[in-house]
Length: 307
Image (cartoon, rainbow, N blue to C red; front, side, top):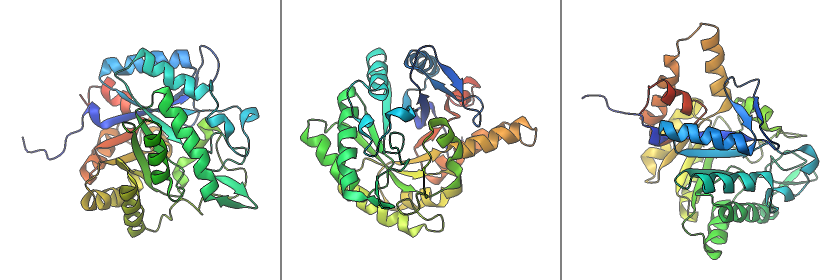
């Protein structure tokens, strides 16, 4: 009666990793209980989640090293693993909400989110690649496209590209405040997407900054974003609240791989109770997020903690 915040299945988005091949289900060593799925097993996993009431999925591809190049051409080539996965999920489960990741790093031989020349990221040239990628995702059936690259002006560019090609109904979930964080390690292990040289500090946000997120959010809102996302989630609850208090757009929080691995390790060692999972997810809701990308999504439904 007096509880101020409630968590529902509708608030959760489940990130899923995809690999090529058949009948593949390979656990990510640094993320117990999380797997890389071939498309056939991905469909089985989505089906089991749908039966629990979980209907939103963010797909991430593990791309073979031999397919990567400087310009991430594999990201929009017809018939690629990722596009086949999107099409398969939407064909089998039309009612599922499919979120897709737009960034060059899974497909780039440099491991960066943008085109690299002489150690620098070429912002505007990268937008063209991102536009082709987003359009390929929309044509494959994506419901929400989530650019995680942090290039300047990419929301406006993608909105214009999608609208011009008849996809005005496809939403944009912008990684508005994506920090240059040390919490991404297990995710990069899962996809093999770590930078080959340098780091991402020139285009991701400084962990010391919060007001900068207001500038990024204002630009994204003006350019046509439908959601504003904060990543990571747990160390940046203040930023989630800051965006919630200053913008009318829905706020998403990404409960990232390092946060997941940290809790799982503490629980496995008996240092913390499993209840920290629900407490963590509620903290995002309390801070103002209505969409929570979390690797805990399926298990909290299986345990009956969330309906």
